[in-house]
Amino acid sequence: MKNITFPLTVVLFTLFFICSCSGKTDRSARPMPMIKLEPAQKTYRLGDPLSIRVSTTLKKGTLKKVELYMNNRLLITGTNEIFSYPIQSLNYTGVNTLRVVAETSQGIQNSRIFNFTVLAVNRPVNYTYKVVKAYNHSTDHFTQGLEIKGDYLYEGTGENGKSALYQISLSTSRIIRSKPLEDRFFGEGITLLGNKIYQLTYKNQLGFVYDLESFAVIDSFRFASKEGWGLTNDGKSLIMSDGTGTLTWINPSDYSIEKKIDVVDHEKVWQYLNELEYVDGFIWANVWGSDLIIQIDANNGEIKGIVNLKGILSVMETTQSSQVDVLNGIAFIPSSGNLLVTGKLWPKMFEIKIEKSE
Image (cartoon, rainbow, N blue to C red; front, side, top):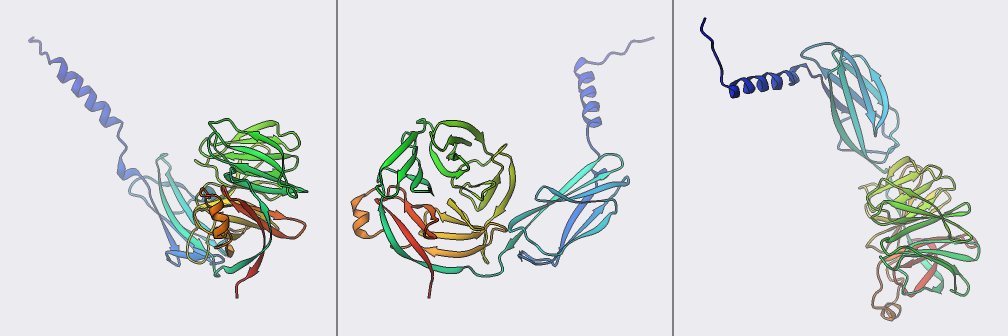
């Protein structure tokens, strides 16, 4: 009998081809889920009803289950190829993400993602301001966080090599205590909760926790946002901004994310939220690069009011320091119910009374 031999390269190629083919998934076996919103609109309003219709097409196999998620939260698990999930009243502002995952009895999965936006119903109220009192402010302080407790002002400042935490007498402007950050850290927003001070850093995804009395560092924490900007609290949770239009609630015990809310008015999702101050269910926020402070409903992210502080820093005060930067810094004054505002490298801080524009 005659021996037949094959070149080694042919054998190897054949084996490779067989292995490659055997690893391929039959695309026709994948379930094809789809999402349709009723009514079909580009944007929705807070309080609108909505019906989410899910349909799954199968070319092969049988359907095991279909899972519908909204903003990574499971809404419902179904077993029918077509079903609807009703929402009586939308209360999730900003960009919302729907994700449907279909799985066959053979274990083959496929998913689809659909985004929609929810905006506020009403236009924000326009406010103006009245300056009640002016305080001196260090033109060396690149203000990133501001808060008042008792007779003292607590200020967090930024810039690498200059970032620090300060306790300052409101009546005399004298620095009582300070704590510099390492040069590699760019300090950002601060907030006082209990007997602790929390401070963010800009791009290190790192926050520090200080003892209120001694300024000793007692803890540190990581946060998921790429950047840290503003920080406040509602008495229970930390609330941070990251330069986008999203506010994030953080558990101060384990630093886990509790929830996120997009900040919206009747027209758009806002961006560049900076320094924050929580007061009686509302969050006051600087909008970076502008003269605006916005009043945000902490329950749903709706902007209730806009304060335009244009002109608060006079020409005379501006010429005192050629390096003045943007408006940034909001602190609630419990004794008067007014706000204390300042900016980065500003020579003054101003107690202002918020008034409706005529």
